[in-house]
Figure 1 (cartoon, one colour):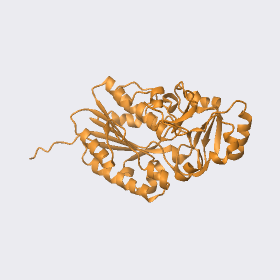
Figure 2 (cartoon, rainbow, N blue to C red):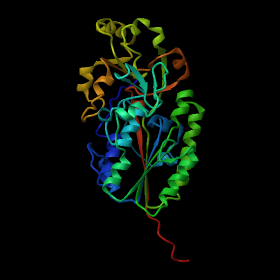
Figure 3 (cartoon, one colour):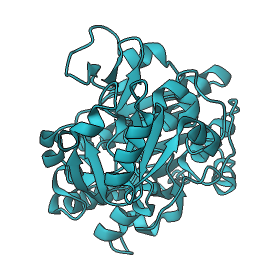
Length: 375
């Protein structure tokens, strides 16, 4: 498989910084010049739609060149590292690189509880529920792009998603919500998110029939929506791509687990290892024996110097989150916690392959419609 690092000069991070810049909001990273030029047209409504898991390879597998999305495909851009929903959507929501916002993956190690926490579910590695506010939100807060925009101008901002302030439960509701908000007599920015085709590819793999059906539905509904929009810029991208993985679990490697304070954190293809005192030499020997061909292994110092997680400042919790060593998948292998997990997942992401890292930038421009004066 082709190894591909994130490109922080041509990425979803740069895309969202272009959006911040266009509203006059402070921004910390490079912008995308091609997107800057489009945003200078000052559309009344700007919509950023994120389709979870719809990498370029997925888009090209299921949609023909004459499909709506591929006709409006502008270029390939990079995800961030790791290319996974937690890290990438937080970048799109905040305008910050993962190194700076600190939300690195599905689970993260927190020294306060001496365990890893599934950041969206607020559960520990052992399954215990943490009561109250999400621990990650409390310890790693960030300001959303919409809020940053509303601080500096009169534009309104909305999040149209199953988790947003404009709550939706179906894709049809997402389409309807975007249409409704783009008909309002106001300047606004919409961040819209939908969890497919990621969900069905995790269960059925990258070539499953359900993924194709989702792509066709998304393409059809967005073309229909586009015909009804006016004075609107629609930007469509994804948080990451997908590959079909080959899975193993920590249960098969008790000698590796004996070296660790807790189960590996972050993602099955991007793993942080927190070592017990005095176990470094043994850990390195065991890991390289079993996984040396499938993963790149970095020390904490090497990871910090690599700028793999972004070129800006590091979140105060970053060093602890990446552990003593950090492993990055460059092949098909994934290391899950349990046998149950490894059997449940087929499609995967968060590693450093071209398929996982490359996402589309799709641009649909809908100028202001002229009123029909002939009636």
